[in-house]
Image 1 (tube, helix red, strand yellow):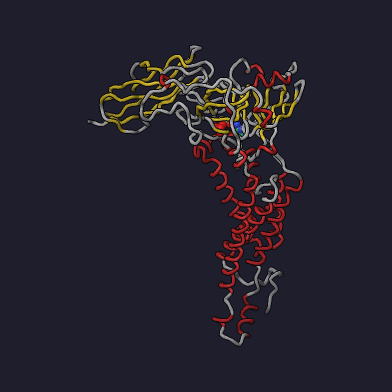
Image 2 (tube, rainbow, N blue to C red):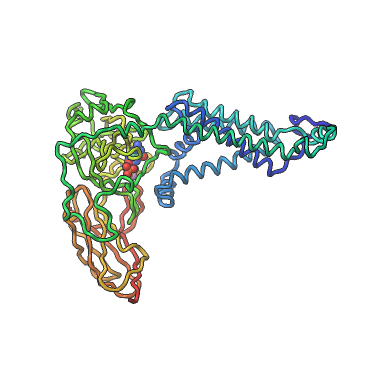
Length: 529
Ligand SMILES: Nc1nc2c(c(=O)[nH]1)N[C@H]1C(S)=C(S)[C@@H](COP(=O)(O)O)O[C@H]1N2
Ligand SMILES: [Mo]
């Protein structure tokens, strides 16, 4: 009568609902264990994030494009939600296997742990061999919790036990269902404590207090506030300087790398005469400059918001490299990040423009998400080939010897910024009253500078817009046009011409491989009055 739970043949039925709930809670418990274990070292992270990192690295470019197009800067959350869904389905599968074919469940759990372990020790920033520990313990904990929740005693034996009990069954002996729910609650609670506790424990590796303690030096060329002529007082136009909070963020990092200054150095390596390693204080003791530069992402769609202008504070890259001596033959400067990201650009780009190792942004130490403690900023080329955040190394090499992170993923090795313009106001599909309406926005063509911006209403002639004063040739330029709006639905199109005489073409192409082309267009509804 009494079947052993291990026999697998005479197991009592367990409802599908129980298997689903039990396997999910067991997995949450395992993840909690992994989170807590991984929080003991700054070199470890949750296996879920390790797997996410590998997914980011392995995802084909069109997936990345799609993710940015659909989720914008929420692409990371979308990925983590995706992983959670896959994980949940997998866990439930293992749960059912546990009830029907136990060896299969064992294999399933081993694969589950193995994927986490592999993710932890591979990829662009592989952990030490012992980085497999959180995944291994997490998988074992998951399996143990599954056994506890789904393996239970057989219903028959329970019935016997209950029937044998001299006291009232209902009161004294919890029903199997109740016992199951109590176990679920117990494992769930421990999972939450471990998970959140692990998170909290990890906080001691935060770089936030290190950043707060930074006192920024004054530049040798303190810049005045931007002259009023560079901005138009028009509602809805982009502020000339983008606040740090509003500045777009694009990177492959699922969690912001934490680089407290005590542990941080910047090394200059490769084809240089005198490799050096600088501390943050060393960096601050060099001549400091300030520069206003518009940073632009190659993934920016026509009309998109993946660009912003900041006042950067830092050390000139050309001076820094001159001090170490670039060797003959080196034609690429590669910035390397603590998280394994790399971006390379030609040595020839250093033509006198203000390329910086930046540590200040709009009067503050670099925000953690924007690369604290230091990053590269190179005017005129897209961020993916230049603007390495969480910078730990600058390596001089050859293009034939090294590809930056995005190059093998289908993006061009050189990424000069394309001439572009955007309509900030009126917004697409907004309704405006008839009469004089300001159409306004920004145009950019770092390092060439904007020569002309034109606006077209419906199929009319191109009308030349007023340009605000140019601050310099590496920041965007505001433009405006007074439009006599007539009732109805109108299409407004903008195009810019740079000082090389190139006018933005209307043909639309995708951001990959070297930046979108096309003209921004909005439909505006003009009311009858
Ligand atoms: N370490 C690191 N640096 C990086 C990236 C990254 O993924 N990792 N992305 C680059 C890209 S594609 C862009 S457009 C800029 C964006 O900088 P921001 O997030 O400060 O706006 O950072 C660059 N620097
Ligand atoms: Mo980018």
